[in-house]
Length: 266
Ligand code: FAD
Image (cartoon, rainbow, N blue to C red):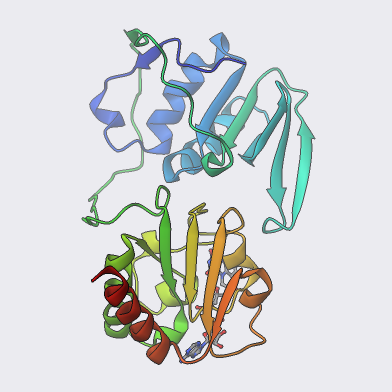
C-alpha cells in the first residue's frame, strides 16, 4: 500500500476559505473521475463534506474506518462502537472517512511531493459563513494529547470545572475534555466534548472526573491506553472500563491529587 504522498493538488479559490461542504464538495467531485478512493479524516470538515461527495457521485460512504482489510474492504465501529462491522464496497468509487487514532502516522517521505494547481469552477453557494472563532489555548489538542483530564456534570458549574481541572491539567501537561452533559450545562466549550458525538480520543492516560460512563461517552475513549476514574458512586459504569478507580468525592480527591503531584514534582 502507498505510504507517502505522491502529489498535492492545490485548488486556490476564495470560496474555499472556510472549507464549507458545498464548494469543497464540487472540487472533490470534479477530481473524482481520476481516482478510485476519496478519503478524508473524521474531522469536522471530513464529516461535513464526504457524505455530500458520496451522494453526488451516488455511492455509499463508509464512515470512521478503523482498519483497511484490502482496497475495497474496511472495518468500522457501529452501535456507538459496541460492534465492528466489515464492509466490502462494490461501487467504482470508494468514499471513506478515517478514524485517525486507529492508524499509526505515515512515515515522512524522503522527497517532498510536488504541488500542482488545479482550476475548478466552484460556483455559487447558498451557504454563507458569517464568523469563525478559534478557542485559543496553550494546551495540547484533544486529538493529539498524551494525557486528558475530562470533567462531567458532577463538577456543578463552569467555575468549579475550571478551578478543579485546570490546576490538575497544568500539573500533567494535559488537554481538558468534557462529557456532553458538562458541555450542555455550559461548563466547557463544544469542542471539548468527548464521545460518540464529540471527539474520539486515544491518549496514554484519560482521567474521567465525575463522569458516569454512558456508552456514548465510552465510545470516544475506547482507544485510551489507561483510564482513571474518579466517581463517588462505586457502581458507576465508568469503573467497568477503568484501569484505576478512586471512589469518593471529587471535590476532595481532585485537589488532593493535584497537591500530591505538586509535592512529587517539588
Ligand atoms: P451523569 O451521567 O449525570 O454522571 C455524573 C456522574 O458524576 C455520576 O456517575 C455521579 O455518581 C458522579 N458524581 C456526582 N457527584 C460527584 C462527586 N461529588 N464526586 C464524584 N463523583 C460524583 N455523552 C458524552 O459524554 N459524549 C457524547 O459524545 C455523547 N453523545 C451522545 C449521543 C446521543 C445520541 C445521546 C442520546 C447521548 C449522548 N451523550 C454523550 C450523553 C450521554 O448519554 C450521557 O448523558 C452523558 O455522557 C452523561 O454525562 P456525565 O457522565 O457528565 O453525567
